[in-house]
Length: 303
Image 1 (spheres, rainbow, N blue to C red):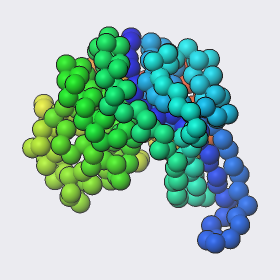
Image 2: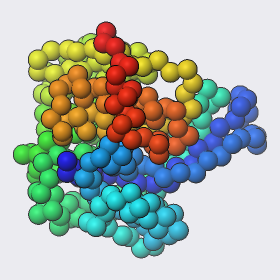
Image 3: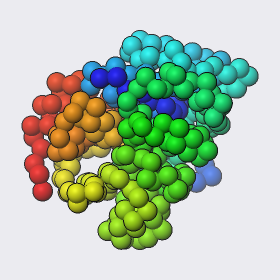
Image 4: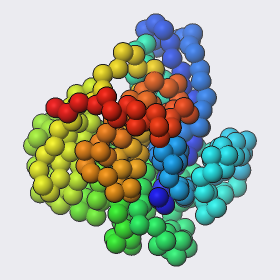
């Protein structure tokens, strides 16, 4: 199925120490480089599930950008409408992981994504209108996101909130987003509440359509116009890298959505994708296949 992802691509640099970090000192660590970015992660995940994926992003003209572009071409992800910008460095994200492989500190240099502006979107209207489904990365500027959801309100809009720091960009456009994925921290930040259920009710009153809420290893809550639905994630013995699991979750859900699956089936794909990604050193798992995901789907148990 054909889908357009609009968002960021970057180089991911992950560093992890096996001991507690000593601030203001050198810490021996394992350092790993890979391709990433919320938009790119979602594009790659959707492609690995067998979809026809187009990716609208921005590239610099440096070594990292050329490598990132080639990796997408090699996966047969269509980037023909993406833009190139000279005299800038490619987006870079650095994740400092704690000894339990969870994020301790994240650093990013992603200013180049601002080149994907309203003028660019307007120049791509005819192209974007060929898609029924738009998957949007909240790393875009607030004005750009608002422009997209209003300009293409006849499309099915799927969004990843990305982070608690960025989620408030969505405050005034909740009714324009068909499916919004948030973790419990992003949910409470957006609602201005401390309680999950109070937050859900508040966002529903502001016009939210479907909320997909994750809470690490706790239950997954889906809030729809038809009520609340709860799902249980798969237990995992060892988390290798938690970065990208949320991107994988919304990618699995989107795969089910664009292929006409039921809500339960969409969540199956979401949970299985996140489960596999947690077992990868990278923010995506290069070993994911549709068959592998469907095998894991069979192991899921409902609450």
